[in-house]
Structures are given as C-alpha cells and as structure tokens.
Amino acid sequence: MKKLAALIALGSALSFNAFAQTAAPAAAEKAPTAQQNKMKTCNTDAGDKKGDERKAFMKSCLSAKPAKAATQQDKMKACNADPKAKTLKGDERKAFMKECLSAKAA
Image (cartoon, rainbow, N blue to C red; front, side, top):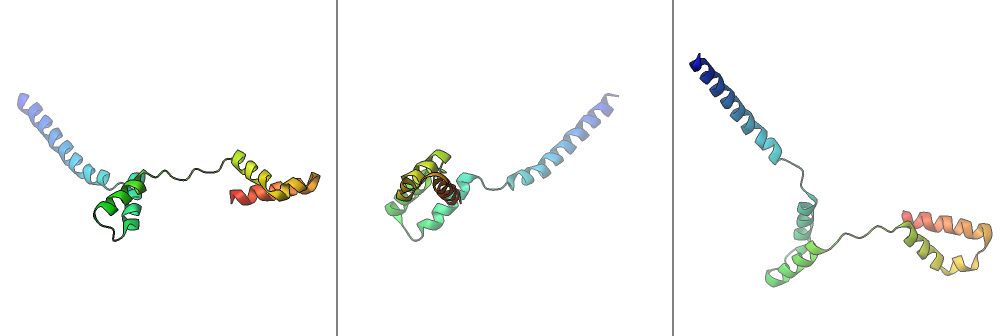
C-alpha cells in the first residue's frame, strides 16, 4: 500500500513538473509593456548618436512624461481667450463656442 501511494505521489509530481514547463513559455510571450515600447521608440529616435550624447538623449527621452490631455476647462479658457469670442453675443457666441470646443477636442 505504501508503494502504491509513493508511486501516485511521484506520478503527480512528474505530471505537475511537465505542466509547469509547458506553461512557462506561454507566459514569456506577453505583449511589451508601456516602458518597453517607450524604450523601443527612444532607441529608434536616438539614431546614430554615440557615447555621452546618446546617454543624455536616452535619459531625457525616457524620463519625458506623455502630453497631458486638455481638460474641458482648458478648452473653455482657450476658446474664451479668442478675440472673436469677445465680440460675439447671444446665439452667435453659443455657435462659436460650440464649434471652437468641438474643434479643440478633435
């Protein structure tokens, strides 16, 4: 009876090990992360730069933050600052603001 239990345990361990080995390569084939994509882009942009020049470029490129999307409040400020908006009144102003805000979003 002990031998049978030992054989079952050994068989289970071997089958688990075989499963773990086949599952590992699938995990290694993940899509690149945002940082990896950024590194690829910076490497491409670096081109023929060498030495300290390349190092400085890569440092600034990799540390650069992505551009912040304009908020609705920012769009309103920009449209209100337009000289044309200051001269319009009523429905004309509404139409202008609608067009301006939709154009800035696109």
